[in-house]
Image 1 (cartoon, rainbow, N blue to C red):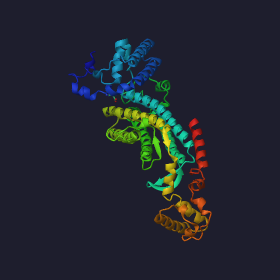
Image 2: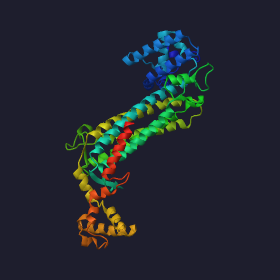
Image 3: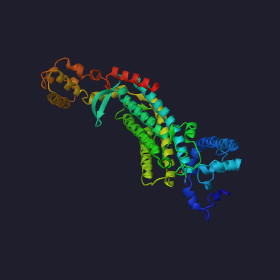
Image 4: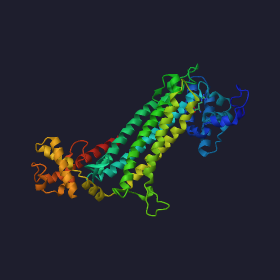
Length: 460
Ligand code: ARG
């Protein structure tokens, strides 16, 4: 059979060139080749175990697929557009290499359950890799946090100075986000790891197959229970992409902060030169390109999520060619997330912290005003009255252009007679931090304990 005549049995004329190019997926789905071979080997083994093909056929198929694998790895394999996709390319080559045994491989199988299996094998593998990369980034965050439980910076709400926190505490917020991200991926993996093979085109097959046997061989946790669902739904890919979009969203927020912190207006950190570029016109510039691109690429991954959801929404059961469009968004999601996580872990290691700038920023925005209010409450004032008294004190300080800690006792007493000498402990940044001494608080000993727990969780 000539390449161009794949459907010659049924069709009166060859497929138009333009249509061939429009419908072919081999240009991108060749990425699934190794999983396609893995799936075919397991399928063939089952066919032989169930006496559907002979042992001789099985051995020929194994030999042929082994050679094809080598040809793909070495780059010798010739991908043909005429053969539409990765599946037909490999099957055709197999038949050329081993004859009739190659033609028997597709017994009891359809490209519909075959491609669904390949995508699941691919995604399972990539999920494992991504989980490792998340861990590496978490570990880099912990290394940096460990050094900064006493490094004080302003915590913000509405991007206005709110209360003092430690830099370590801030970093640990991202550790927590990534921890949930990893949990989500692990959970998603359970639903990825189900075998579609055996569903055939849509209704199952009349051959006496053993689906559980194939599932075992391929390391799946079980089989997809309904053949129509098995070949048609891509919810596992959508779910994966949602997990990926969320990870990117977290890193985008972090990137936004790194960009702000590196701006001379903040000057809290410096990012190592190898993650920045200069300007072609302004010689003084050092731009945080990597975090900016992470922020930008987040839009792209979110776009892939929307693309996949939209791809699915109008499809009647069971398989439709629309599903071929799942691959490029999915591959690009994996690629983008993989590169982002890899580069991020390295970038965190290269962050230079500027504690003096952080500290002076924390001193500028009346960050201990809440502490003063809490102090008055502890002396017996209702919180709302304390809030009012401190608001007046802040206004006073603002007019004078000084900090709360620079106001004398006599002057502070205009706002409340409950204020005495011990107030200055409360007004210090260190005092403010140390007082938030509960689980989840910014007190240095609490954050240090959180880091210890976090490290233990990574070792699991
Ligand atoms: N290339 C196709 C895809 O990615 C494989 C399945 C084709 N099935 C079919 N009935 N045309 O979805």
